[in-house]
Length: 224
Image (tube, rainbow, N blue to C red; front, side):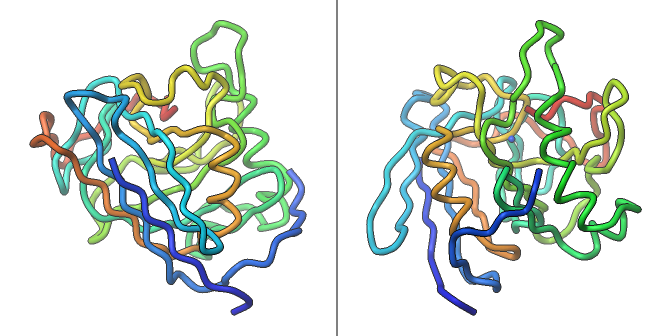
C-alpha cells in the first residue's frame, strides 16, 4: 500500500495513474440524504488531512429501503462497497466483474467509461451524464440486483448503482437522478484519487424510506 485515506460523506479511456493511491479497501464513505430539503444532502470528506464539504443529489422517485432491489429513480439505503472506479485517468474493477464482462481489463480500461459517458439517455443530444467519474457500488450483504454488462442503443456499458459526476451541476443538491448519487465533478475528482475497491459506503436518510421493492426490479436501463 502506498498511501491510506478515509472518506466520510454526510447529509447514481486510457489508464493513466498520476496520483499515489491505496490498493486496499480501507476507507469509508457515509452519505445522509435529506428528504425534506434535498439541497441539504451534503458530503464531507477528509482527504490528505483536509476537510471537503459538498452537496449531493439523489433519486427523482425517492429513497428505497435497506435490502431493496435497485429500481429506476430510487436511491437505496444501506451498506455498500465499491466494486469499480472509473474516470478518464483511472480504472479499477473487481476481478469477478472483469470476468463477468467477457472482456479484458485493458479493453475495459480503454473503452468502458468513455462508452458509458457517450450515451444520450434522454434523447436530447446531450451526453456525459456521468461527468468526470463513476464509483460503482454493490450492496452488503449481497442481494438480487439488475446490475449487469449490456448494450444501450448499441453501446456496451456497465449498469449499476453508483456515485458519479454530472454534465449539469445545477442538478446537484436536487432529487432528480435515475437513482444514483451525483456530485460536483471537481470534488468527485478528488474522491476518485483516494477511494479504493472494497471501501464501505453507508447511505442513510433523515426520514424513513418511502419505497420498498424486493426481488423485483425495473428493466429501465437508465441509471444516471
